[in-house]
Image (cartoon, rainbow, N blue to C red; front, side, top):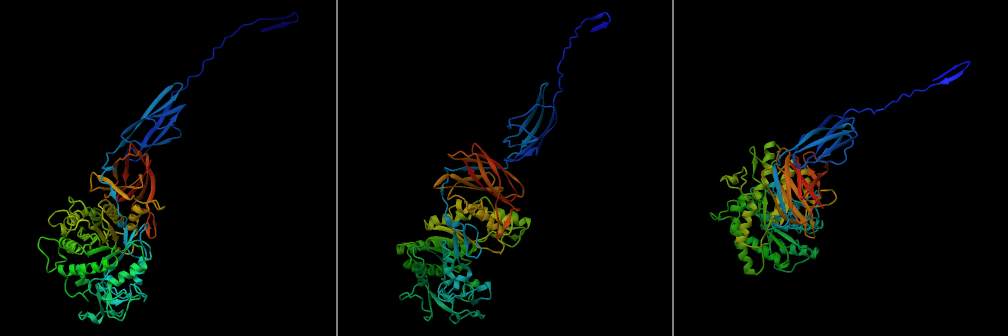
Length: 594
């Protein structure tokens, strides 16, 4: 302080000491910490949402990495309680949120060292049509039209399908074999049907008059073996058509190709489908004679060609040739056929039957409706997605006249045992089959299941027969195996063990490539009407960290003519265990990533 007057100035001092103490902040506050959804299935994720004030740092345990923002995605493999810690200079506060992992509904167990065998590339086949699925590997020229097909003129008869008429529906061309060349020229392995019944169309002049009789008025004799030299073009003035000359024409036109010939079509139904030329039901003995005669003629011309027969239409045909007059009680027709074809082959010193050729249109019903009908009601859907089990699962008893004794059909194994007993080495083929619902997700589930079964059970050849015009979901099932990523990627060429703990809910098929065993592709199928939590365990020498996933569901994108499997979030794989939730009625293809 300074004091002044006229006499002068004086000063004095006093010191005030001020101690400054920093303000103590308030503790941080967590306003919310939640998990959504709080319950998840295997392979699903949950989002942890958080809100905190006054915190200088945030952390979550178990660790989810750096926490920034207001949410973080977690993928727990067990039920997990997450703890959020908010910290500042005054201390820490915590909050918890639990994510409950629902138990897996099904366990899928895969082992690449067990049940290993090559998958025949011919199982992804289709009956020749202008539209065929992506990745078709085998085509067939067959059906009712081929029974009376005159290869010299391309005339044929529609049979019961349309007024029993002779016409030019197969080809309007006058070039011999033109109707077949369009199939062969696709440059895909092709199965060609040879007429065997005995008569082929003479003209293209419309319906054959009823009552039927005197075949020679509208038909030429179809003869297995020509008694004279082949000519090219064939003579159309000799009042006969020779099938070995047709085989020679095929072999000459396509040198070096593996040839496949089917001996006619559904002979057990000839007296109905082709009543214009087959007046009475065929017998065991007659069909055997026709088969051995034509097979011998084919092998004379093309020794390396593969012969398919008897091209039976269905279960009653397999058992009794549709009630043939010389059927033997207690023995299936297929037993008789295989045994006698084996004997005929031994007598000639060459195989006369290479592939046991069957047709399979399931008799299974749902709500009293056969599953191959144009019907996609809930009851039919349920029956349809289960029906493929009748190919291999003896414990599954479908609803049909076949299972009246309450025993599962187990078709592939039953027929396989018959082959092993009567004619070992004969392959198995299904050159017509359809499970219905090709325009519905249930049809996709069934078709994908069937393709998986054919590969796993070592079926040699199969060709789908379309029953309706809209086959979008059947085509989608095809893509799940043959072009799942829309870039040409396909199921592997080698099958290995893949088992589901509950076959009523799920199916699984596993593969790798023989030349690249680390490339593993798996198809998992949900047969149920709701989401299905699965725990997939893979035993393999390779270690995988993820799997690219492509799903086919009821809402998959449609790009004519097919629905397209949709790429979804990669599945996480830990210790070669993949946990996922499969959508209702779905087909999921997994491509494992090292």
